[in-house]
Image (cartoon, rainbow, N blue to C red):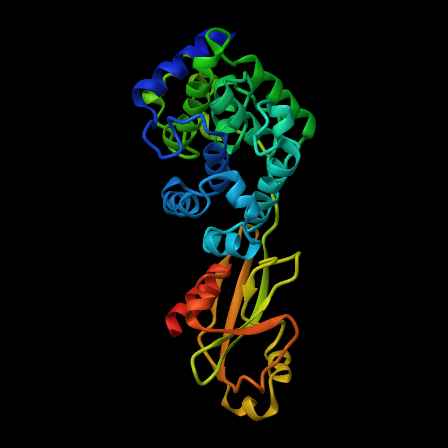
Length: 348
């Protein structure tokens, strides 16, 4: 069954207007700063989680120039707990580039937006569509699911050529009339369908506005789409965390390297073994080290088995490169990995 671009797009637009999400704080605006901020935060993160972070960011950084002028540590501090910290580092770099290269104004074309740090093809299209009405296709995970099902697109998306083919078909379905008005609703409509109707499991096909056009519904096999054979293997890693405190309650934290797990964040000193941790602390403090219950922290493709080891030291005894003592009101403002923040809050 051939799908008419006009018919498909109009159904999505009408449905979004009547049934889609229309009251989120980053909607009903064409301010590219606010739309960009929401798009970056929403990458691999649920709307409910993003809401509070988005409000705090806007309160502290109301525009791109304020964000560009901020210190990265403050940006990471506000991001702390949201995860995928490369997004925060790219967010800061992007703001600086918008100010330095583009005079503080976001480019209006998706092709140019893609040249900025942290903005990929789909995110660039979303910004250009929402803010400037550009006829540009998005293809995030939810939208891939919607379109592969509607089109019956069963080619393996592990192949770059097949992914390019899906991009081409996504572009062919874009609205062709009243584009400036239609594009924001069409783009949001695809997002809303993927988030609330065309679910990975048990999709609500009876509520879908494009069900009559959907090849997967006719086949009765929507859950087989999209097809992707290559899956990243999960790995496991154990770390021992030194939870060192001084007599006045200060905590010793060290900044992580620029690459790897928790890159650029402040963290409890981490070691590959209990012996390595013990060898790194002053001799007089080793006998007083206390092992706390280990726990699992799950990253996207890695299971971290974390082993906290607590100890009290004088500030003069514990000195390591790249670290410092932080009082409670100081570490609370830093960019910290979520499990480290929880440990510190529990001990405060």
